[in-house]
Length: 172
Image (cartoon, rainbow, N blue to C red; front, side, top):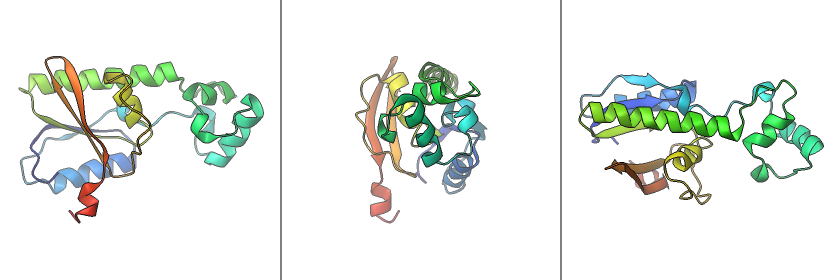
């Protein structure tokens, strides 16, 4: 992405995403925008489970819901199992994602359009995709450091690439 001219850039407010975005912008050949942190791109909030391992969370979810496979667990399952009642529900996560994407589009349009960098997490990217392109995410792998590319024109999104890691394969 060193040659891509970005009109604006976002990351979640979590350290790993922020550092990744800073690294991308630092190695960009163009004049880069100031990085903006946005909670809308943050990973799911697990409430009382924050800081717990996947195994610890799964044990409690299995006890409370009977679900024993992590791939079947939804945000609603986590929220239902959270004794503190703080974990985000699917509806809350989806609303946050939709609002974040709407804000990005509005800002990019004010700037005359162009490329926008968004750095989020592998767990949140499918939610962001679903917010703007319902039913387009089919469970594809979105690995750490992969690139997912969308276009937006005339009120419509189009998914160009999802979980692309070809730059790694090409040593770029």
